[in-house]
Every structure is written in C-alpha cells, then in structure tokens.
Length: 292
Image (cartoon, rainbow, N blue to C red; front, side, top):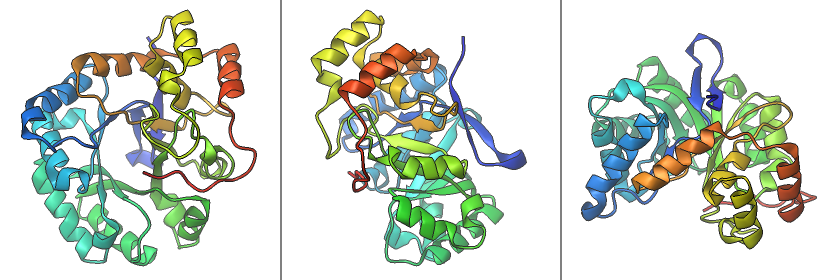
C-alpha cells in the first residue's frame, strides 16, 4: 500500500507528512460534541492521518483543547499545526500567543506554526518572533496562511524568509483553482508545499460545489470511490511530477474519517484528471485569492 506523502521543510529537520491530514475548524464550539470530536481525531491517528491542523481562532482556543485531549499519550504520533491571529503576531505578542496555544494543547511544542492571514504587523517582526520561538524549541517550523502571490513575494524579499517559510495554507479545491495560475507555480519553484483547507469544497467564491455534482457522483461510482475520496485524491494529485499539496478536511464521524484516510492510497489516472479538468477548469487568468 502506497501512502501519499509531502515533505515539509529542508535539511535534517524536514518532515514527511501524509498528504491528507485532519482539520479542526468548528471543533470545540459545542461541549456536547466534544467526545465525538476527540474520538474522530484519535481514529484518524489510528488510520495514519497524523497531521492535525488547528488555530487559536477556532472556537477561541476550544479546538486546541479538543486536539490536546486527542493527543494525550500520543504526542509523538502527531505532526501538530496551529496558527496565530495577525494582531497577535508581534515581536512579543506572538510569543505569548504561542505559549497560550501550547497550554491549551497540553504540549511543549508545535511542529508548524502559521501566521493565520496577512495583517498590519510588519512581516519582519513576525518572522523575528517565529525565529525566537524556534530557537526556544516551542515550534519546529513556521509558515503563513491565506497569502497570495504578491504577499509571498514580499515575504521572500526579506532576508532568509523564503528558506525559513515552509508552508502556505490556502483554500483550494476542484471548483476553486485560482492558485494554479500564479501562486502554486511560484511555490513549486521555491519548493514550498501548499496546505489546502476546505478541500471538499465546503466554501469558496468560485463555481459550484462539486461534491454534489451529478457528474462527480457518477465518476466516483465508476472508480469505486466516494465523491469525497475523488475530490481529496484530486487535490493531493501530483503536478509536474511533484506532490506538493496537503489536504486538511475536517471529519467528526468515524465513517467520514475512514473515508478520508482511504484517499491516501488513490492515484487518479490521466483520463480521470482530464475529465475533471474539462468539467471544472482552472481560470485562464489570475483571480483574487479565495478566502474564508
């Protein structure tokens, strides 16, 4: 069985992670769902979905608490990702925000710490804080989220930033392919993977939701897949002989978690990819970055 993986970072501290992880947006919002959410994340770990993505924003830290409980006794199995608010990303405020996240998560470090979206604090100041967190062992890698091509270019203009930034997390799915025009090629050039949120087209400004499209449902059935597995396999497909996208779908039922995990084993053939391109083509010119 081949499990699709993506490399994060460079050098001896780089990490191989599964091309499909676990998202936690909207987790921690209702105490009645807490136990089910914890069990879903733990089931994902059992099935090899070792990357878990969360943020201080999600349920005002509640999602981090869910993740912390799911990781108890299993921290070494998890590649842990969290994100900091832009207004908490200052020279000293980022340190405090990270420490608060670590307390909620019940761990002494996160593996990847992201600036949640561009804000008013100078990037150089945020990077300085991230470097201090890395030097102290509180984070292993850092990156950004919701950065378009111009913002990535501004980041790369800072000394050492292009090498230090390991990931850009953006909205990406079959019906929202705007990043393929400029952003994704730039990131491939810089050997920087994409982390795709909403990979099952739960949100986005462009096009319809392919998850419920009759053509997608029929094609998935022909391939003995579920529509969700088809969409995840498409998002994490190789492009230019490179697998550089990590999808982070959220699932709170054990069945959906298992469904997602099976997509790690799927490689779509060229005929299938061609059909999907015809039904949901990428834009011919750059469009604004899709953001939720």
